[in-house]
Image (cartoon, rainbow, N blue to C red):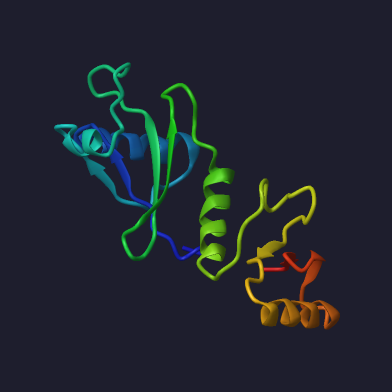
Length: 156
């Protein structure tokens, strides 16, 4: 909610299995599931989303994450094998990064722990002489930092 996102689960299981799973999580781990879970009884939705791989048998699916923007555009898809849990830090990093990208910034590798610019974001390269001049003024004013006119960065 803090990231202005909604989470929806999907599983090839019956509703009663989801209810029991939610009950178990709450009882054993002390966490209440606060997002809807779609019961894909037939597996049709999972198949259309590419979540059923050849190695998976029966109701087994790969663990998939789809990041969809407010316009309904799929921005990222992550697949995890059944044996490997999702990396929540990476999923949150991706959501935050895509939200910043929507504001016109580029996100460097390993952001927000980039070895060169830390948690800063990259300002798109200047594509006109006028923009180069403005970038140099912004750098002098301390609004951005630059390695050169074409590689500038700033705090998000």
